[in-house]
Length: 399
Image (tube, rainbow, N blue to C red; front, side, top):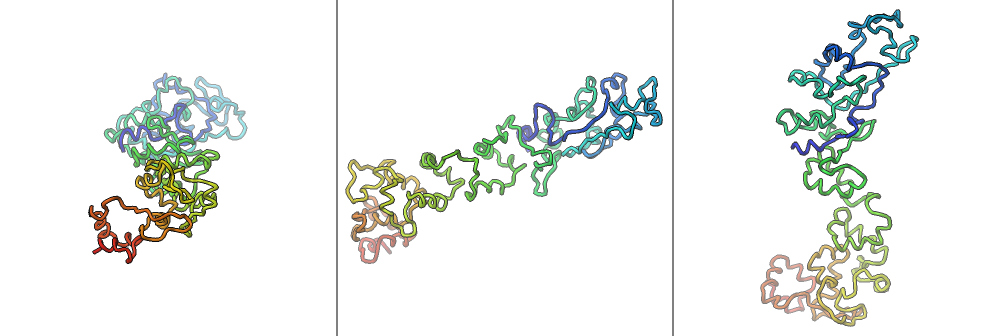
């Protein structure tokens, strides 16, 4: 993993350590780190287990035995007065001496951490936990932030930089992100990958720049939950998008195809709305097409009555221009039979319902240029879509 990848990974929270990584604690205690440090008491004098701890779940808060080295605690005398604080309520505020004092609860962090390795390398406690000389009771606010860890765990030069060194992993090898306390998500501080509601639309650039970065937390089958075109995320398109989607579809149909299957999703809807051909027969339903027009004026050379269109030229509003640009877009709604209704051998009879005679789909000098023979050699079946054995011109260029 690169340094840039790690810097932007997770939980760089400005208001403190992640509440998912370090769950909320219950510390019904009174204690002053500042006061004890002024007396030159070393951290490990009270936190005796810390130098040998190898797991984040180890409970490292000092027990009563550690305090009794200096404080003459006597449970039989809970309100004992001494030169050094010995009353139980000196550390357990509000306790009246009846029953057990309120218990301390420090949930296990959702991390892997080894104090022993860090101590053995001479890393001081304050390097991770900060300056404690002005801190009274230490809480989760004194837990290290990820930015602190990255001062060493970057690029693998000083320390390993793999996510799994610190973060819990799932069996698939991805970072575990869902816990009872909430769900982990990138901060977006550098990569712009904050997982806000709009990120579902805007994540493409982050994914293209470094797919492996996303795969630290996401499996590829998560991408397919949206990108297979079967189930539409309801929050992706705005309200009444159906009425304006044609603008986006004409501008960038490839983008639409990232989620939608043109020959099933689009055609099915267009047939129900009456703006598509009857694919089962291959022939347009003329009455419906007269009511709702999907293509602009001048899309074909002649109108439905068979009369020539004036001022005809091949431009982006003509089907020939669009077909040459992206025939797949045409094939989303039309079959070969649709093209053959007009583009057939000129010697064949016109279709009675259109009154349109055959329009030669080949450019001038088609046979002489050699493109005819090349196509025949590649796939002879294509030629037989239009040409029959009675058409001598087709037979002339066939081997």
